[in-house]
Length: 221
Image (cartoon, rainbow, N blue to C red; front, side, top):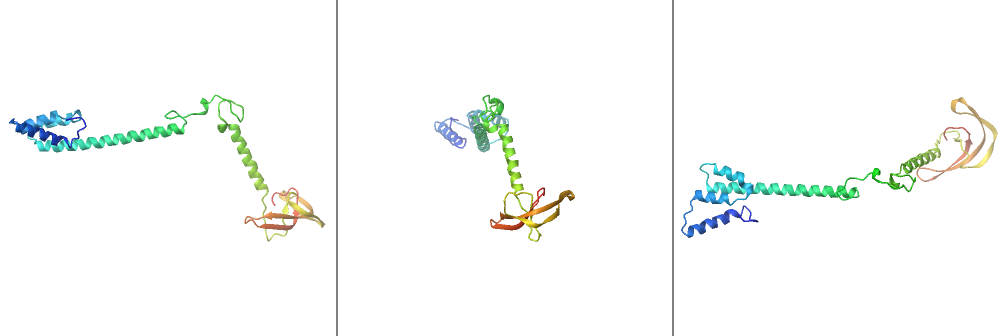
């Protein structure tokens, strides 16, 4: 069997060879044809050749059919192995690219020996700086605290709105008579002033509240 010849083509080439021998007057019976056919096969068919040689009453046609089935099986196996190798190479390339080095192991902070531009410490880069992460966390907590402290609870049914902060108040005026208000833990506070507050609602519309009582020490507005 010549290199590059498929098993589907090989039986035809073999038949042409047999016909050529017969035209020269040489007698080539079926048993001899089997011997010639099996000896022409590549090493992938060694096991099958051995089985055929030890099988009685097998015909030439049956052997050709078995060879075709074996060939199809080998082709499917080769295609599967090729696809598997392609997928494995693609994964290695992707992993290497993600790690910054094609096909190399992942990098970590231990490999970095230069100084961090954020904290001037050695052993890590600026983007992995723990000091920067702590600062970001502190800023987040501070900003969240500011947002919470600036919230108002508006109750349209309340007698008066109250606030512990003077910031944001306008139109300050003294009350004609002090108002006694009980706040947390039963503490009594005297209110002597009222103010106007301008807010922005969740819908973006302006809200103007008048006569807001200023009570230092109040927990929530």
